[in-house]
Image (cartoon, rainbow, N blue to C red; front, side, top):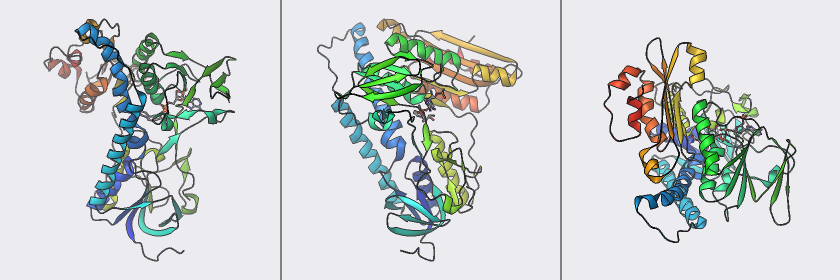
Length: 449
Ligand code: NDP
């Protein structure tokens, strides 16, 4: 089949995840005729197999501690049990509901949904299954997928994609990696009563977060019973007739488990898109773009994880929005990547914005660090030893807060607001001028001495 001579669409978006959906919707609102191609379900990683179902599992898992703590608050709850299939199915149903809302939003904005795998056939044309379409501009927003190491037997492991669909919970699970997904799922499975071992190729968890904060997570995780093996890359994996696995490490140790989950980073989805034929260049497997999201082909743009800038949903959404405003709204917009706050939904969660203490010392020289290391009131009455840790990093030359880092209950919720102040360039003195809300955990941020 040959492609129609004239573009049928102003914009063809490939990939209906966070970045693609936002771009399609905003471009359509600017008056563009838009189609979006998706081979799976509308919503992408965040909605279908990432942030949303993960956060719901975190809520579900946290009941384990809440129910335990409830006794100290006078509540007797006899014979409590946890049914994984109930939580799993409710979460999957919620995911389906949100995916439906995304599809509906696209439709109400007049965006045509093309189900199928899209391959570029030229700079302004693509084939979606057996249908040829032409578009004035093409946006690639195909995201990323979990990386699985290629040591023998690693295909017997799962990734976060499959974790949401488990038939039953594994008694013993090994999680390879030490980043976001490893620590979030270690917390989730541990709260559900699984025996969790995290194995990491290096001796660092959550690279990029403040050292003291990530060390606190490690200490608390160990206290909760999560095992960590560091400098322990996988050598091979073998599967037995009873479906259990033996994971052999390069340290010479081997570990038996019922499931092995890889959380070893994510790789951009660039294969099978026909990028070569359209002259789109890659950089370390990701689409190379300029700061207006344009690839090396002027008709083709890319946003989100496929570009390997900052792999976070809200960043992809901003890039998608900026692209649509730039190309269809006559308003060139660059995303501001400074002071992006982020969080890890571990047990307890942690969050940060700006420079870590060591980054600040390296870059700024004269730095002051203020910390509060405290046991949240609720933990005290519950008899739970876990302590929270809050930190502000201050540039001593002008008093500005250049970094904020915390671990403790609700840290991500608190951090979102702190990030406004840090991004606005407020000083430590201005933090101190604000009256505390008592009794809260967040008040520590205006009481740091
Ligand atoms: P991360 O980049 O957070 O961590 C990857 C981990 O795997 C690191 O410990 C890394 O070790 C290790 N690793 C990398 N490559 C290999 C390899 N070849 N063999 C063995 N180990 C390896 O990745 P995740 O998979 O946890 O998450 C992917 C991305 O998704 C994150 O970077 C984040 O941007 C996003 N995400 C965000 C969340 C949030 O905002 N809460 C939640 C989940 C994901 P080393 O440190 O030594 O390199």
